[in-house]
Image (cartoon, rainbow, N blue to C red):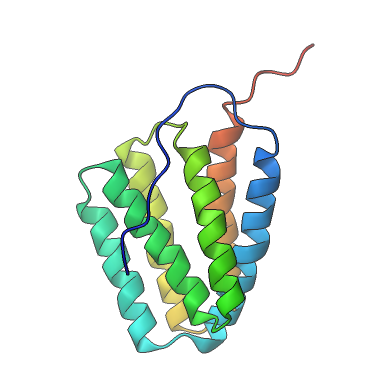
Length: 155
């Protein structure tokens, strides 16, 4: 699979509709992980583990993000629904544009990758409920960080 392009880093306020992007991400990713928990095979688990290893070894955020995108798309591929893979690819592109606006401290990336490992284990056990819980925490973390970029509400 070729390396996905990444968004250029940018500062400034989040674009209108940013929250809808994250809502769509939840819908697509929860659906994908639910199906993947039932259908995942050893080859996809290998791909997920390789992506986690690449994230651990990444020295630059772009390398981390490419492996992260591969991780999430592999989950969609495990769903065996091609349109879900297309939607996941589209959502990952839009999310990349949003997260290009935030800092990426190593401790946050390590925490995120811990979520990835826990998700792999739930998928390996075909435990869809646990996989969804882990994924929702993972996605909520991104939303929490992005929400911090929003200007304070007027008092």
